[in-house]
Each structure stands twice: as structure tokens, then as C-alpha cells.
Length: 406
Image (cartoon, rainbow, N blue to C red; front, side, top):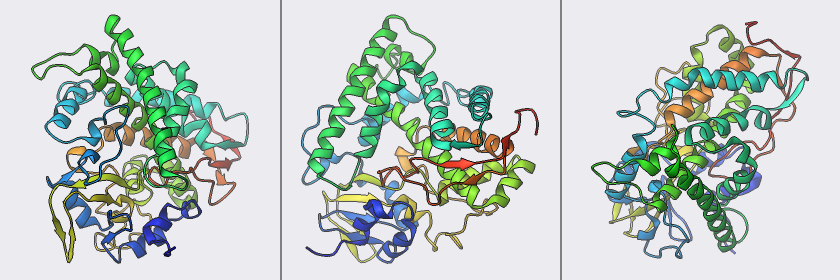
């Protein structure tokens, strides 16, 4: 058996705590062909170019060797224009500009209340798990509220969402078995959301799911299957990535305690802090679902038509040809440009919400926890190398300040 490539080593669980040393090696070959015929692109300029290249498809059914038929069609994040554009427009009208321009901003007060209550919940002790106590329940509550999913059903959809996330892309174990598990979980979650959609069609509310099932405009309306796949995407993406962003953020701040002090005294610093986190410790490390629709030449490498392309976003954001001293966390950088939300037509739909959630959570944690410190560094990590983040982040602290005592 040939030795594992750098890319294969990155996906090994043993390297989950620190893949960045391997990313430096990966960037030495900006476009690296793998044994399975895929091409991994790891440098910033090349990734940005491909994110905006119409010769690059997000639909894996266009591979020269497409995957076996799945039980459900892909969501709009994994299809191309014009269908992608139609579904995204019909979805966005219930979430952001131009039709719902203040949806996210109007949540600011509710977000602060949620975080305040969660931190109050750990005030009677001096040890907490940031994941279980804050970083997971916070965005789950928010996406349930927005989408119209009963918060009491979280135990029901949690297992399905986790199974989908942990079986995406390459990993250890049998690939066919992982794909089967992912398809089964995705179908179960989609059927659950489809049933909720049918209830909302009969009794619509002010939530996104009600909008998805009732709106019909010049472009028509979403089909029942499109509602199911779109709602599944929004539910998973609406909390899984934000959990990682908040947890990675708190881990990074605890490793840089002087920044915790600054956040207490400079509240607006949290804006640049979150942007630097999206570059330095992003919640999404790879986009593994791109297909070359034509031969694409990058430097001295030709990616043949029909080939699979993997974009190593986390590597690109730390490319030293993109910015200076990329392995240093510095929210004072005059230029923070990152790939944390992807780019091009598939740029993250929920980026404004994720930014605001992380800003509110990290600012309140910094303000209220007295002398927080890590219990274990590195912490235990989740299995996924694509949506990378700690499974638990246990901390100790002297006490929790009351919400108004700043």
C-alpha cells in the first residue's frame, strides 16, 4: 500500500487537533492530484478563482463517474444555475434582502436574551462545557425559531443532523457504509421537515418554513421535495457550523487571554475578532463537492473534464501569499479576507446570522466569566474533518458575573 498523501493524512482523526502543519505541506503543491483521481486545491488565489469559475459545477451528478442514485435529490447548495438561482431566490426572500432586509438584525435582542439565559445556567458552578452549555443550544434555539421547528423536537432531529455531518466527505471506515448512513439520516430528517411543512401549509405562521410552503410568485413555488431538501439544508447549516465557530472562538480566546481582556474593554473588537476567527479557525475546512465541466488549467496542472475538485478553504485562508504571518491570530489585521463562508454563487446563505450569533456569544462569555481557563488543551474533537470543531470544550472559572455587572 502506498504511503498516505498529505491530504489523506489531514483527514485522519489523529490530526484533527492541528491540521495546519499539514496544510503548509499541502500548499507546496497548490493543485494536487489524489490516487482516486480528484484534485485538491489549497492556495487562496486559486480557490477564489475556482469559486467564481462557471466551468466548475457543484453538482456531483456531473462527475465522469457520478455517485450512485440517492434517495433524495441534492439541495440547492449542490446544484447549478438556473435551478440553483431559482431555489435560492425563493428561499432568501423569507430570510434577507431585498424582501426581508431586517430579519437578522431584528433578532439581536432575542439573541442576547438567549445567551444571557444560557450563561445564567452555569452561574451556580465553576466548571462548564462550552459546547453543551452554550455553543450548541444557542444556535439550535435560533434556527428552530427562524425555521419554525419546535424546540422540543431537538432530541429527534439531533441524531439525524449529527449523522449527516459526520459522514460527509472522506473519513475513516467504509465509504459505502458512510454514504448509506448519510442517505438514511437525510431521508429521515427530510420526511420530518416535510411533515412540518404540510402542517404549515394548512396553518401558516411567521417562520421561514411557512414562507417556503405558501409563497408562489413569478418564478412559481417550491415543490414539496424542494421544500424538504431546502429545510434540511437550513436546519443543519443553521446550527452545526455556528457551534464550531463559537467553540473554536472561545478556544482561541482562552489561548490568547489578553484578547479576552480587550473584549471586555473594547466591545466593538468582537467584530474583527469573529472575522479573524473565520480565517484562522474556520468551522468549514473543505468544499468537497465540485466538478470540472471542462479541462481547467491551473499553473502547470490540467484538471480534466469530469474530475472531482476539492477546495481546501482552511488552507487557503492561511496562505502566506495571501497575507503576512497567517498562522498568528490577530484581530487587528488591517486586511482580513478569508474563505470562511466560501464564495461565488454558493457563498454561505446564513453568513450574517452566523456572524451576529458568534459576536453576541463571545462578547457575553468574555464579559461574564471571571478568570476562565481550559481544562484540557487540545480538547477532544468531533470526528468530521470537513466541519471541524471540538466535541467538548470544558473550562473552569472563578465565578460568573451577573448580566448587568459589567
